[in-house]
Length: 155
Ligand SMILES: Nc1ncnc2c1ncn2[C@@H]1O[C@H](COP(=O)(O)OP(=O)(O)O)[C@@H](O)[C@H]1O
Ligand SMILES: [Mg+2]
Image (cartoon, rainbow, N blue to C red; front, top):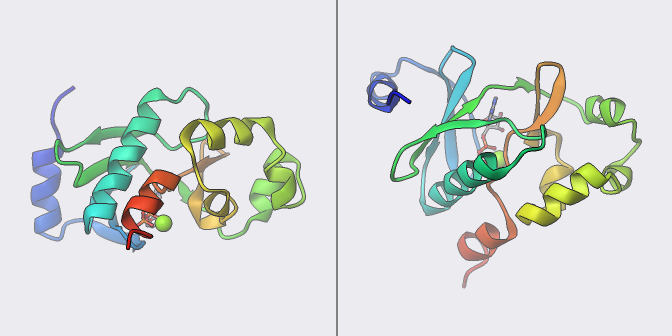
């Protein structure tokens, strides 16, 4: 695969991309070609980029927006861009469920939660999801139990 990161990094420095949003650990910009770039702000962001890269690499469910490239230091990660979900009812309708408890009963969701040690509290948040090709996908999946213990609750 050709390395498109140097050009993307220089475009970020020049302010050429639209800012989409951020969480506690990463800033996200729209590459305007169907992808976003997530830029780690701190060690926790680097850990989350690394985790998303690994999960995307190993996973064969259709539940995650795919990572297509990361920088060697995991500061930059490129992921498929999903449409925003404003409301959990989209997810409910798609999976034919009524609430979080029923979401947690879906074997599909149970499998990935267990396999990757994801936090249910994140899976229950509509901001962790987006829409790709008309299907809900998880867009924020780097915050595993291991990452949360290491970077957020380490005293
Ligand atoms: N794949 C994506 N497609 C579209 N928007 C995204 C994507 N990933 C993240 N975003 C947007 O960027 C914001 C921050 O990204 P997120 O992964 O939640 O960062 P953090 O790990 O810091 O919480 C999200 O709330 C969402 O609005
Ligand atoms: Mg987030």
